[in-house]
Length: 274
Image 1 (cartoon, rainbow, N blue to C red):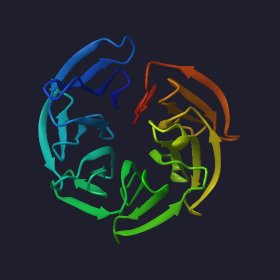
Image 2 (image 1 turned 90 degrees about the vertical axis):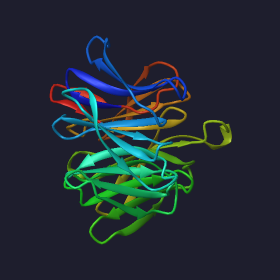
Image 3 (image 1 turned 180 degrees about the vertical axis):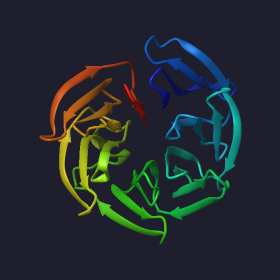
């Protein structure tokens, strides 16, 4: 899910192998503005900083697809490694960063040249975050209860083990200013004994877990407000979104939504936060 401007947003839709599309919706009325047919088990949709191009991960095609937001047409494709299974993505510093769940790596696609750089993280990443300049990437390894920091210049990978309460992290989000990394701990969606329901706050400079808070079962998607005052987490198994105050990490509200919420974006007057 991604936002081109404050007036519309894009999301991937899947109703079977022969019926996949990126859907463009009006952000106010939720009316469908366009349907862009694509293939490849579409996952995440993200935008560049100005909303000119969207980037869609196609897991079964080991590909990232670029969509021109002006024409709503595919404009380029970027091939990743065999069985890369790209899932989450972010755009930072002129590159698309991708969590390769099958390839057990983080990839960075240079949008100027099309060149792809890949750094092994030796685990299953679900989502990726990055600093605005693209110098550093972050991901969480769902199979190891570990958060990873990648220095793109040196290709150095620094691991941080989550507390024993973690069940298996899913999405990560770098807060404004880059001082805090938010980690949603989903765990298993099929085994109640291994289902996660916590949000972890990581101090990026000190590279340590500061705090955690209980949220909805199957905590998957996470996004922070632009001022850093609020963080929002989807509870996939409780059909809700938890709203937390980042100063106290207390839960301010629980908003009931549709069945099985997954990713989450935040819309405000300036546009969207992926």
